[in-house]
Length: 329
Image (cartoon, rainbow, N blue to C red; front, side):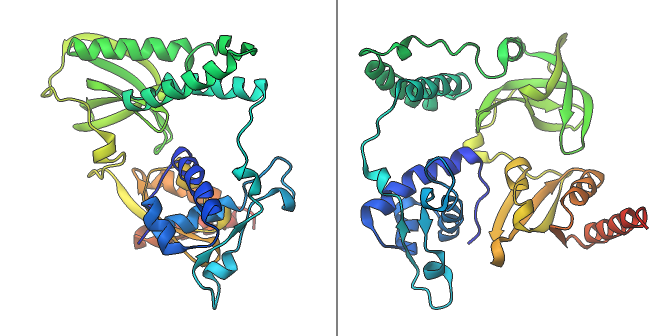
């Protein structure tokens, strides 16, 4: 079973559940932990590799949580998770006024881009923190300022919501990271959706003749037109059910093998699947809209990446790498 791609926010949530679970039970079999936490065993292993780099401030060996991966995965291992040097997690949490202030500011910022369900959870946490802080501490009076993205992003979202309600087309100037270019297009807005801390316009793109998601902080300009939408009105998609990166005729999936130094791309680019390999390497299926963009990315990652497929992408990358090396000859 492969590790499902996920953002940093999802991984932090899992770790906050995983560590107290392991600490309370001592030694736990890998399969039992996966069942209890509702994730694949490969995902638990991936999270344990991250856990090795977590701990108290300072970063010295004695500050970090220790996970015995040799006993878990090594030859002759018994498949049991053993976590040590995490006793401080059993102590009740005590926040200083500065720490409480930082958490309240972060929660208020998160609330600005959260969906209704998440906003309810954030509001409950804020209520508890602010009630506790009100007893002799000024942190309940903290004003975090504007929501993430600033007032311009707030105004943009309001304008796009009005265009959606009025069934008006919008002309966008939009940065496309997969092609590293600024594009101009006319869209029929369908609604605003939020996922992983970012806000998107879900709309029908007339240039692509397909629905597309446009991240608001990548929209350089949005002009609401007098023309009415031409596509059939539909509600915005449910990203929790449909997924964030649906395949389209315009995209190709490239399979890459990444050394540990290149694993960061999983957090920044659209991937369909991630599979763990020996030596800390990953095999990923990366969604590619433009081969030229992929070549630039691969040359940046060299020598820590190998193209496993499709064959034509592997060949073009090898040619580009040789041509680049010849420039130094």
